[in-house]
Image (cartoon, rainbow, N blue to C red; front, side, top):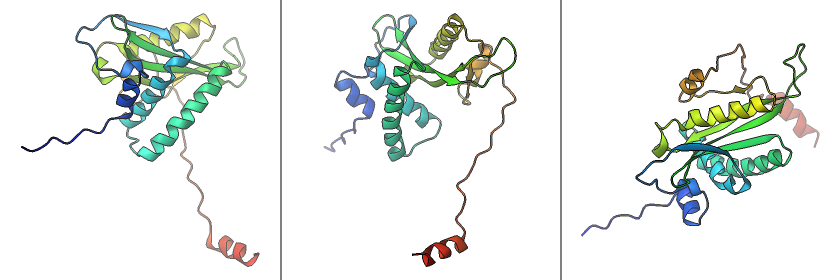
Amino acid sequence: MRSTPRRRSSLSDRLASRGQGKGLRRPSRSAGRVIVREATARDLPVLVVHRRRMWRAIGRRNRAELDAHDRRYRRWFATERAADRLRAFVAVDAGDGRVLGSGALWLTPSQPRPGPRSRDAAPYLLSMFTEPSARGRGVASHLVRAMVAWSRVHGFLRITLHASKMGRSVYERLGFVSTNEMRLELRAPRRRQGLRTTARRRH
C-alpha cells in the first residue's frame, strides 16, 4: 500500500497547536453572529499571521521576505501601540470566539491644513484580512464599520487606505471614494562605472 506523505504544518497550524492564534483553529460547523472588539496584546500572534496571509493573497510569496517582515511587523506593532498610534480590531464569532478577521488603524502624522478639518493625525486603515472559511459573512464590512465608528467617536474627520482589487468593492459600499493621489515608484540608482573606478583608485 502506498503511504500518504505527511503534510508539512503551516505557521498558522503551529500557532494553533500551541494555543496561540486562537482564530486559526478549524471552524465549527455552526456559525454564530460576527462581533468586533478591539485587539489586545494577546491577539498579536494572530494579527501577525493575518498580515502575512494578506501579503500572500496579493502576490508576495517569497518566504524569506515574509519571515523577515513578520519580525519587523511584530516590533513595529508593539512600538506604535505603546505610543498610542495604533488601534487593531478583530472580528470574532460570537458562538465560539474564533477570530474571523482583523484590521488596524494607524494614526499617521498629518500636515497642517486651513479650515476646521485640520488635525495633527489622521487614521490610516491597514492590515485587513478575513479568514477564507469566514468569507461571505460580512467580516470585512463589520471591521471597517467598527473602525469608522471609533474614528468618529475620537473626533477624526477622514480615513484613508490603500484598496486592493479584492477589497475595493467593500470600501465603496461603505462610502469610501477614490481620491486624486498619485504615486511614483523610485528605483535604486545604478552606480556608474566611472564612480566605481574612482573609488578603487582612492584605496
